[in-house]
Image (cartoon, rainbow, N blue to C red; front, side, top):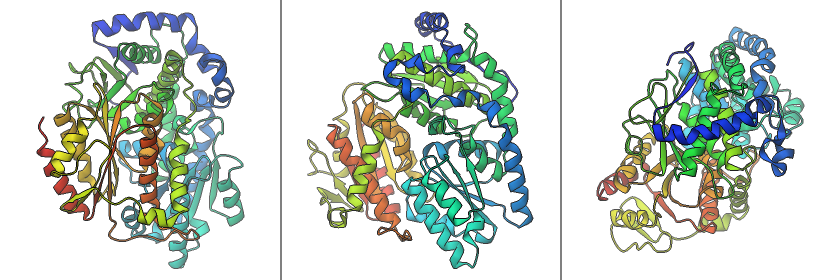
Length: 540
């Protein structure tokens, strides 16, 4: 679906359409779309009202973000006159996912750092610093990963004889610690985002537009695309695609399909499912309910065409026979459509779509480990080792056999219609082959299987893992880094931070009663190859 074509949602499955129709009628009768567009915070009940009251400005961003366009264009021109044309983005979750989709779709270069892997950060540092500006993007102003990147790049600029302050652009909320630091340090430019927009709804705020626009994306066109569908999304009528999409999700969930499998079918958008994953998981996965997004690489991937009764395939682009639901439209319009639909399905699920009550636990666990170096570096000993893979097995999984046998026993712990989450605390560029494990494990286990790069996924699906349906099992992959990077002014390296984040999240998942199998690769390349061979031995 190329930009400029109609934004719409199609339900081709007759049974799902029939079950969705009464929900659409009820949403129309309750005037939900119009109230949402008007910023009514009462839509999700009294318990959510105070949070919703300060989280609804995203519905009007197609208008309110217009002044940013000139500021971004002026800064980009200024930087180019100085020979600065390489943009690095340091941000996590909502601060990185939208800019990455925007720039990949438009084919403009943006180096995204949403990792604590020292190898991946070192590769970004190896670029031409003389041509580099770094956008440090954090809503809270205290994101540990982003602060680490800022410190590392500031030192690298200084070591290269470059005025670091002139190469740092900040995007943050007013009054945040990062805003105060930027003013004190005299950073190149500070963009203050609308504080009444949550991170995962921030695609059309400064968080999405500034890094993408500096990289060369046409952000004015994005706002035009969103504006083109805004009136339709605010209408309380059967032609509103957000009502159709939310009702389809709600009806499927009520019927036991709490997972939505997302595949691109020729939308013209690159990586949209990765952005939608955070939006849906973090907004709905709480209070023991929610929708688990499963992003797959194609309509032919395991888990899409062969989705079981616990999942609904959704095509991003033209509909296919395998997908009962399809959404189409240009990127700016799709951002707004999916945000509306996600907020509305929150009402159907009777949850607050704007909080993330279970995210902090993993962060705190990682901080505790960093504050106890002996515990972090000593830690638990592996249950066993198989070649270059050390095995840290959960209760109930014997490690007497081969790695393939361990995997088989681990997969058997999944409940009926449960899911498998593969979490790779690795370098998503140099260790990219790890992503192949999703399809292979899904094919052999028969489970809906997600894949996330750590700690990136902690800012998205991490909320669902702890707060959503408690039927997941978790495969963590960690690896020994070839080199490590000091974090200036901090008593830890990136490698230690990455390790603490993996162990901390695993600890919290275990406390929730979920099985966690950690495989540590003592040699990453050899370990991934060994693991893939073991997965191939697991019977389908």
